[in-house]
Amino acid sequence: MEIRKLGIDGVCEITNRKFGDARGYFMEAFSQERMAAAGLDYNWVQDNQSFSAEKHVLRGLHFQTAPYAQCKLVRVLKGAIFDVAVDLRRGSPTYGQWESCVLTAEKSNQLLVPVGFAHGFLTLEPATEVFYKVSARYAPNNDRSIRYDDPVLSVAWPLAGATPILSDKDRNAPFLAYIADQIQF
Image (cartoon, rainbow, N blue to C red; front, side, top):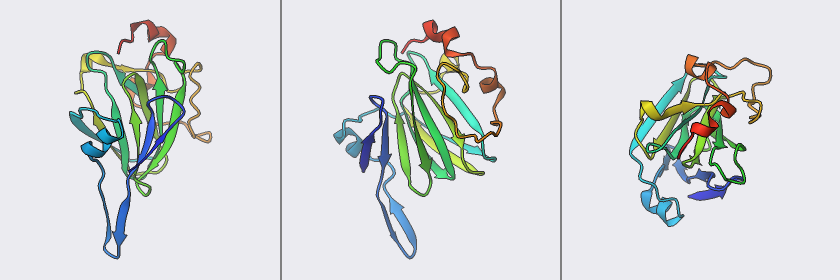
């Protein structure tokens, strides 16, 4: 397991080794023991999977508030995504900043999104499947969203002029400035 710390404290890219031969490959996709040894010891309670039929499906920016704030460990089973973590930790020197990583099924890399961050992704290929572990169960009353195109955040989504495919929830999400004082982790 290779861990690469990204520019914002706590956000990491994790890549696991693949062992391949003529039949295909084997990969240990998750090891609680190895994660804990690397200082990434989380209590994972739920696995989620999404499928996006089209390129440019944008999901996010999502997060949950206390007491159901979530850490996420995201990977791609098929296709590729531009994965984003936005720091929402008040008092953090990187508050409001974002970090990104391209995750692909071929590379088998993962993004660790810590508690206190909003998360979102853009599909870069059609028929993309995303799988992620979370450290707290889904709690609808604590579920929140921020607009993907919030001008203060200025996430550089690689849309190349395309219009993203959004859910109604994401299309109507508020800007961070309107909800910042309501966010508690």
